[in-house]
Image 1 (cartoon, helix red, strand yellow):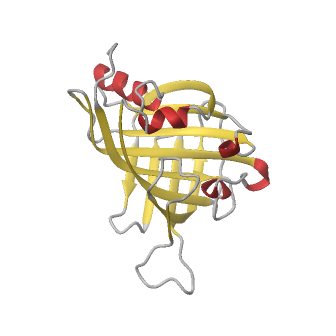
Image 2 (cartoon, one colour):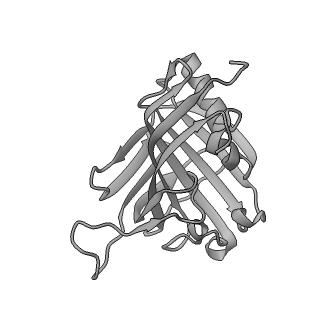
Length: 214
């Protein structure tokens, strides 16, 4: 894989972070109390890296930073978990894409990362309700993150609290963020452990391609 082939990933992403609801980072502002810890989870519904199929794989990252990353004030410390069911070629493809070496939006996002503490291959469960009422991800014995869609007294039944074109979207421009709140968070990995309830969460679909820039 010396020359990067054409690739595309389409899927679902969500995070749960330590910020108040709603997370200021999604508005390109500094995080609550200027510090953020969180988990980020991806599910690839359809994907390929040249002739390497990437359908169905899950990834999960733990991260932490201080300051406004969108203003260039901070770099993220991160560790990445990749679905252990991927074979060697699929693992290499996923690492190149998510590490930013294959171009596209992940290359732009990788510029915000200052330290990668490691990559592990583990079983990862990822679920998103079809009506976006809830989402969850789990690594047995290591990480659990569960959230439900945010609602309130003036939210119409069955409708979601959403934002179009968020200015600080982790999956790139032009998407719709569905806001939620955490029900349970517990992380253990890469020295980035934390717990939390009723913290900010959001679901955003993604559609990336490369190797051309996003």
